Structures are given as C-alpha cells and as structure tokens.
Amino acid sequence: MPAGPLSSEANKLPQDQELLRECLAVSGFLAVAADDKYFEVKRGRLSPLYLSMKALWKRPDLVASIDEHLLAINSDRPWDVVVGVAFGGIPHAVTLARQLRAPLVLWRGNQGDGRQLAGDVPTSAQSALVVEDVLATGSSAEPSVAVLRSLVPVIRLTAVFTYGLDDLITATRSIDVSTLFQVDRLVDLLEIDTHGQLTVRYAEFRNRLKAEVLAARGAS
Image 1 (cartoon, helix red, strand yellow):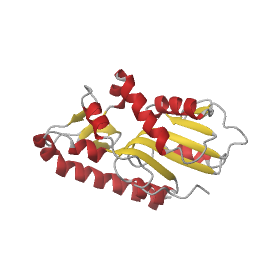
Image 2 (cartoon, helix red, strand yellow):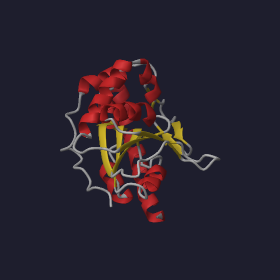
Image 3 (cartoon, rainbow, N blue to C red):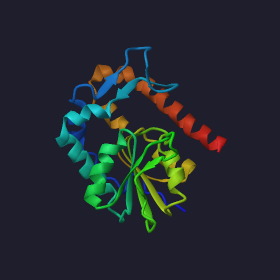
C-alpha cells in the first residue's frame, strides 16, 4: 500500500514568489493563447496557456533552486530509488537522485524491447520517488507508478508545477502526491490585462482536467 497522502499545504514550503517571477521572466516559458485560441498541450487536451519547462534549462540557477525546493518538500523520509518520467521529469530526477544518493531509473514508456524502466530498481528498495515536471491529471506518471507498485511498497509522485488537483489525484489514483507550485500562482502574477483575459478560460481548463481525472477513476 502507498504511504498516506500528504496534507496539500502543511508539507509545502511557503510559495517562493520571487522564484516564480524569475521563471516568468524566462523567454518562452509561459505563453498565453489569444482569445478563442488554444494550445494542444497533449493530444486532445486544449489549454489557454502553455508551460515550456525546457525553456528554464537556459537558466541552470533557476533549475537548481527549483530542485532544492523539490528536495526539501520530499525530505520527510529516505528514498531508495528516484524515477524520472520522460522527458521533463528527468533533469530534476537526476539532481534529486544525486542529492539523495539514491539510484536513478528512467521511465521510458512503451519501448519495442519491452524495457520500460531504464535502470534497475534495487531488490531491497522500500520507497520510490517518481519525478514529473508538470502534473495535470497524473496520467503521464500512472504507467510508471503501476509498474513500480509491484516492486516497492511506498511510492510518491512529486512535480514542480501542478494545476491544483493534487488531492483529487491522490484519491483517485491512490498515490501519495507532493508538488511545489500551483500554476494558479503564475496566472496571478501576470499583467492585469492578460490575467483578466485568461481567468475564465483557465478556470474552464481546470474543470476539464478535473473531469479527466474523474473519468479515469470511472474507467478503472
């Protein structure tokens, strides 16, 4: 059985607003679609905004600060293996594994050779930290979690950004979730005009994400 879910607030560091502002200042990190336009951020998933975590890679200092925060919110227990979900979670997983002195495993997804995990989960491992960059509905990480359930008793999914559905994902997917920043905080930091134009569409997008999570539970 997975560990009990974390409190959505008590186990987080205070929101680092300056770090979020620095992320927003990175060219290409956040894009907002024009009125009535959307980005296809995932097949069939249309969003009024687009987060490019790869854009932050041009600022290693910001990535390092983010990883320090991720390490801090997951320091409540030892981790025997760190699993990076391709592609965005891998850079953060590399750093966390090094800092935790834990083996690193990469989730490759569906591969022709049948090896979904690149690397070996120690046979003695009792806990696994699964790392994502952006957590929406949990669907991207779910296959890796499903495989890991047969290998380790305690699994936690951690991510840099979330759309605020952590508690719902915990309940529907029975997975311990610990995330750093809500995308809502980025939206709140946008210029007034942009924020005003985006508010309603962003709320509608979050409702669609919620419906996806609930639909996944109904299908399971």
